[in-house]
Image (cartoon, rainbow, N blue to C red; front, top):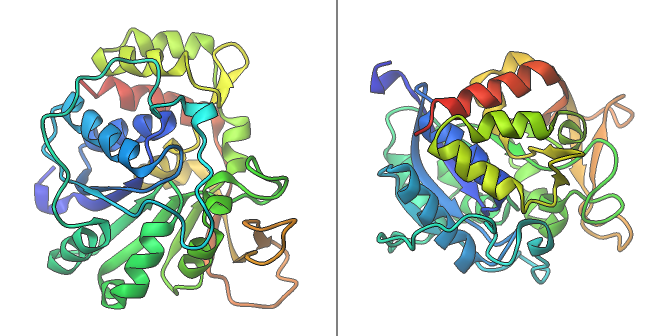
Length: 308
């Protein structure tokens, strides 16, 4: 495919084991042009997520710039998920320490430059808390005119995995999520519900291990991933965002009004999805309600097969 025809994306991420899988797929998809990777505090602190992003880019042999984002949510203190992803965020594989450094520009300035200088609209793919994206839209609202859409992993139509009603990315920075969801931009929400059903089992992970160098690396991470287990099934949350960008037809979606709870101590970070339009408000989010599970699994394995 001609480089001019490729879809330009920015990945905002907090690697994270399932982030690593999504990043691998995006970097080797021949229809995509990853212009920038920005990092955010989430699964682990931003120093570690930045170092992990640099490790991954170097591992894959890609010349994609990495910019470091903010170190904490807008209001709350950071409560990471190192119990799921390990102390480093990528426990289970010995990466070389990266030789490259992050850009001097911080994440939101780097994003602004890429978006404003692009000759075609940019897709944002946030797969961590939405802190950087909220700051970008607040500090540089002029970028909205050259953003095609935001395809994010986060939220839920039911319950949570950080609090009873809060999915991790939303509940880590509810105020940021609220800003993004009220931005007026085209938003696609690939939520927690998808990952609860489309699982990778041990035989799937063994197939991935045998594919290539990337598959072996991913399998090593999987053995330490606590987003499920090799035997009970692993939840590939972040890969749904890249799957939607590349093959949206495998998803069942519904346009809905979605609000983020920011004040209740019981439900802070909950994404309230008005599936039945009780409020009569204009839809602001395309919500992914389901995915063809067999097709997703084969797509994911085939996508990893295209990596090094």
